[in-house]
Length: 280
Image (cartoon, rainbow, N blue to C red; front, side, top):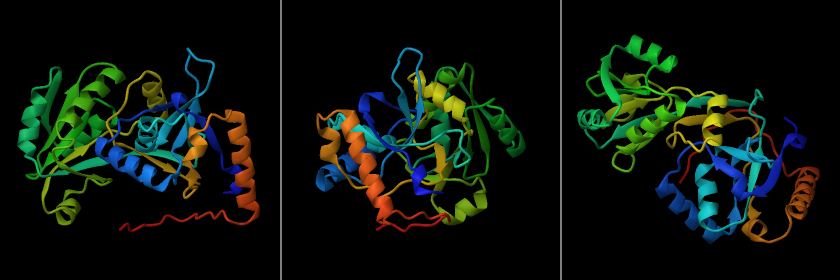
């Protein structure tokens, strides 16, 4: 990938919309970090779209909902985003699953049964996987005893998404939650000895993500897993640039010049291989 393909843009925060809910605890932490550091290190990833009721483009955040929410709550006028083409082979969309510790799996199922319009049905692994693939169920839940339960609700995508949010709200903030990408229970039992439940979500399509965002609907936090080739990190943009009253044209002209200088000074590196990063 060539640095010339990097598309960084400063856009009005009012035109930045989310397709997923945010994590309030993480928003609080990022707000504190932004105030302390005074810079935006990693720009959110967004794709450009057009709502029928607006002549201005909007920017649907694929990754970075927490950063966008933090900027919005801190009162910034604009946001820096990396704009990507959702149809590009450099962008892929899969699903995260939620592994839960610290709650009762059976108790969670009992709570889900109390949600109006939601049914809980025991299933075998094969039928659960098939039903999830064709979106016949909202999600599946595997318990420590290896039983698998399908969570079902009728309705269109937005209605089903609202019910899925209600399911996730039952454990968000109450369970210890880990995002994982495997459904292999033996592996998970070894890695997470306090395993209580695994919530497996369907894989959304890009068109569904765009539809939900443009219709003011959001999927639960941490279930869409976007992999972005050429993701930009360590921009370290001074937040005063986002807060200033300068016209967007002036801000983006400065940004274009800044990026050009970085490229010509050979201060932009592309890492094509997947990596693991250990955090303190």
